[in-house]
Length: 321
Image: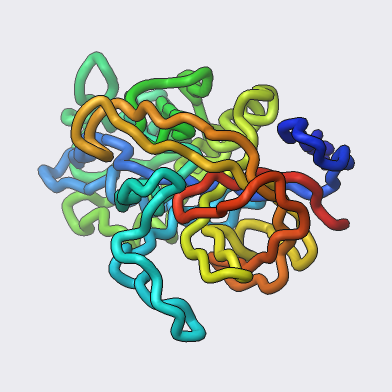
């Protein structure tokens, strides 16, 4: 596994070590657009629905990405031990922390399927491509031998909380081909349902494209030193601090993280305009004491200055092996 070089702000903190573990990046998967797949017999199949479901499955089984988990701001008004908190949460400067700060994602993914075609032994195809639909003159059945999918999947780094365009992460067109055992699609007798899709060779080519696109995005994120792993403080009930990352993200007990105070500011309406938040600097090093699926509790082990607040940014300091 590739080593993660951990970096922190130098404010008198101890020099971190190399970590053998990677923490997962939280991802918001937006809709991947695809045209409806029309069959020669006049039926149709919602290929876009099947593709988005496949992408969600691949993200769920990834060792590098994690589907975004939303936190209801109303639920943050009471900690587990009954200590009342401020509602709505406030940042280090006394400003309300909007919902999008707590729904913290690092990467947003979206995309388009540019072509999807099934071919037989004579290279006759059905499906669609930029040049138009094909295969409407071949009759009511089709013996498929190959499936081919081109998909553009774009990924946008979300360190500014609001996504407005690519920041050095974008996949190109990915071609995923599969040579299948010959299958007979009798379009006059069957409907291409999601159940049929999952048990047919059609799902294999879709899975290949999804995995290839995610692998490309991972490579580009790893190669960019300006895209470190991040999380956010979601509860503060001193001495306990709760962050939006847990065992699902790869955190373990005794991992140490750096907390930075953040000044949250937008050009216009919060969460719906360009984000102009800035870091007010490192405030503390925290150590994980309890890890749950999507959250973890920590205590301060080194304080640079007073004040850890809801909405503060969290980054890696040192991970245990």
